[in-house]
Length: 307
Image (cartoon, rainbow, N blue to C red):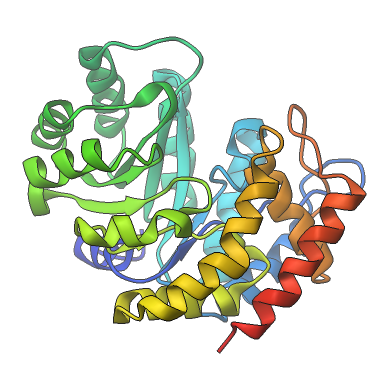
């Protein structure tokens, strides 16, 4: 770890966050050279932390060896300029292995993904997260989504059990449930918006005290993403409304056409702006030619909203 626990919580609690896509070559293998260039470009913009090998980075399709290399490269390239957070999860033992790899590579924290496949009781989810938290000394952010949704009492219990649990990332978009967690657990944790295309929820997040979120579209329209976040925090409702209407609503309309497009469209956007990262891995699929043309039109719209 490069950053103290307090420095990490400060970084993830205020400021725009983003997850770089993971670069694959034409054979679908991790492309280190391309990824290095992406990370340098990424941190040349105004973000406060970098989440590598996350959902947008296709964590769910990476081998442990690939993951280890991705985190190592990220820590090396970012070189202490920003906190680096990597993912872990799937099962208790797999989660421990990924957390250990992240810690050994020098990451400042892990984003704990939900368990794989099976339905989970609340006490089982708390135990799943507790065992992984206890297996690492790095900071942990719990990703509340999928089949890993914790209720407010469960989040409180987990926070009481695990001193290294520093944050909760919302992946569901249930503002009532999230508000219960925020009001119950209070400032013991930092709260991050994390639904796909989180900007569409941004005003609701801010209204309950969730001041930051992870921006996937930052991967291909970073200037507009930063502008949107700044104007949101200033309370400039007119600009927020305009960008939402001009860009985010039509983007979400394309995204919702096929499962997995929340990731696939991000890779397509990166290619359109001349920063290709290869195709997504199965079971995801890339957008159609027509959808890519529509996305290109939205990128042109985004340029008009970039400061």
